[in-house]
Length: 210
Image 1 (cartoon, rainbow, N blue to C red):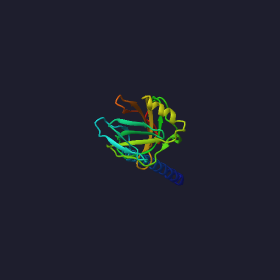
Image 2: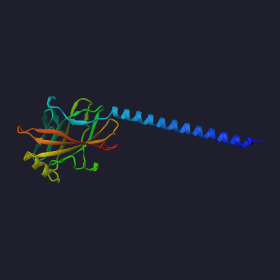
Image 3: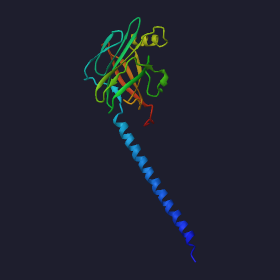
Image 4: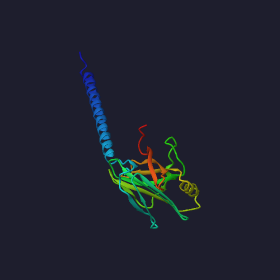
């Protein structure tokens, strides 16, 4: 005679196993949907900074000590006094979200994209928040105010010799995440201005696509 208790136990176990598989599949599908939704949300607020276009309007930038400079589209500025070095660059946000600038490092020589970016703790913090709206132009500005600092002399000589400099710019989205470092070259023009060219972008808070 059939052992109905055993058969019932196996049937219950089988049903439980099927239910567990269905639950696992539903959870995985839900997690994939959540990740997809999260990626879509992040993509909608992700900034990406490039040099502005040559046809973009000029901008007047004022520093905290009331020193001011004018920069043209796709351009930059590098000025030296006995007390300070004033740097600025015209930017365009080609991403879909507001960009918030966090920090910068200027190099007195030309760096290729093969040279790694500086450590995050080596970036100079901005003295004020600078925002660049999605699809719009904006700017970056920075100043070196200690003539005795190690970097002051090399940067000053690069500016005075009209050499090629490199700027690494750290920024992120409106929530403070999706941080990126974009590398720009600053090349002296014959008219005394500087030309800005983007060279490389690094993702900080998510994997790089390369």
